[in-house]
Amino acid sequence: MKEIDTFNERVVALHHALGIRPDYLETSKLPLCREPGELVDTELDFYQRPQKLTPDAFQAWCRMKFAAEDAGVALLLISAFRDIDYQHDLIARKVREGRTIAEVLTVNAAPGFSEHHTGRALDIGTTGCDPLVEEFENTSAFEWLISNAAAFGFTLTYPRGNGYGIDYEPWHWCFTATDPRV
Image 1 (cartoon, rainbow, N blue to C red):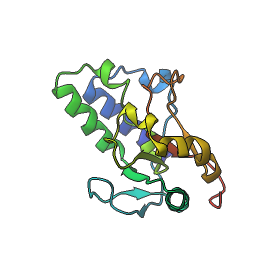
Image 2: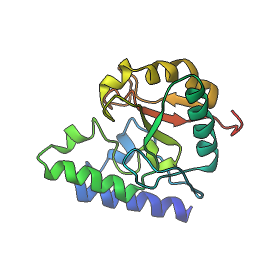
Image 3: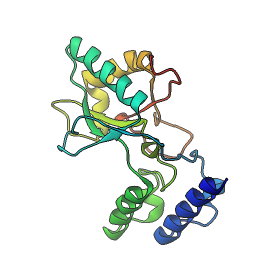
């Protein structure tokens, strides 16, 4: 129980530092996302930064990426695991740039609530399309993901009109299968 209390205390402290409502932990439509016990190194991302995923998510990502490649579709890793401190810094930067916390929380989950914390979420891009833009939905990569990602255990978390209050993110996919052989 102490580990849960410590994680929740860290989340509450980061929320306080950002000016997020004190009751957010209880009222968020997003589930709390704990950091995993084990992560493995992946390939470098689109920006040549090191990334990490859970072992089963990384295996599934590799299988999915190679299957897409075999179909003539390029899937690029844009980002993967982010800890709650990184999420805080990401949001704090946007607030310093002049956005309100309410605006930022429609495009970024609060610390403790991002699927990226689980080591199972990926932001995916493709050649010929800027990363992290809605236009990704018009690419053959997105079309391929819609048709095939579930077979590899990945789901689109934030479709249009999702109930989480997060803007549409066609690039954000999470490994949700419980069987790593999916």
